[in-house]
Image 1 (cartoon, rainbow, N blue to C red):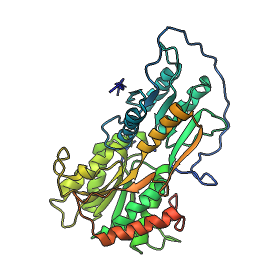
Image 2 (cartoon, rainbow, N blue to C red):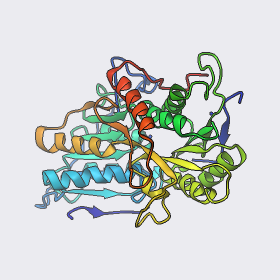
Image 3 (tube, helix red, strand yellow):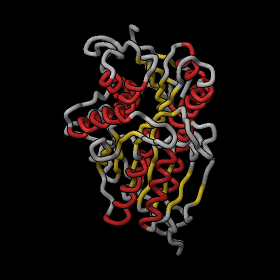
Length: 393
């Protein structure tokens, strides 16, 4: 492989649980855009010394904290780059920051391509937490092309940046619909990383989907809080993405103390804490403890031996957020047809969002799959519009 690793590494009301301290598609109006801010653009002229050393890489990637091996967001992005390497013949390099404080330096290093005569065709920033750092460096290097996953960057102010976005609410609604049909305790939950606009989309969609297929599980959401749909948070900031111990404690409370039998682990690498807890509690509880994965296919993680997965699995499905497709498309545009700044959007309609089915690891009754797929078709057709926030508040 030509890539190289430069790692440094929600009864009566909604229940909000916090445990200490911790990311696509745009319609006629943009509900996902951050509040309008005044941006002062400062152009810094940079000089790159010619060294007679051509850049061996077409693409550079700055991964989210948590790094590779998260079985989720970063791994999906990496797969997209591998697919581009295999199908398009491109080369790429990457770095795995250990903290958000490292983002700006790594992005700048790539943008200045020190030691190489020519720039990267594209620098990909994985995750919304890189937005500020990206905008800073984009101001300094106005000819360098960028892409960022899960954050809207104003294409007028930053004409070299492509925003790779997802309607997470639609994907979450699909797995919520399945949870509403599969629950045995009539109590389901979502363990999100922390509260922000993106995780509000996850939670709003999940609760909506559960109530769509199991009317009343979330109450009359036109005026009341969810009854038996718990919305819980692993932490309060970006550190929640990797806080497996906090996710483990939260999951134990959701399954054991509260009686939820299905928990949607929407929290990146920390979701492993939810999945592992489900596996353990399935041996002791008088009700199932099932998890729902996120971003990538994660049903195999719920088996006794994920290295050689075999039925049964404690993960009944995963919300598939096709970050790999977004990354592949961004690389293809930048290296073959020319970089296209602006918005790339992933929806249920275009296949950017879906849910995992793996009959080898767990057989879901066909009647349930048929109902969820009918719901999916309505979303794709625009007949059902999934809320993109905590709509009961």
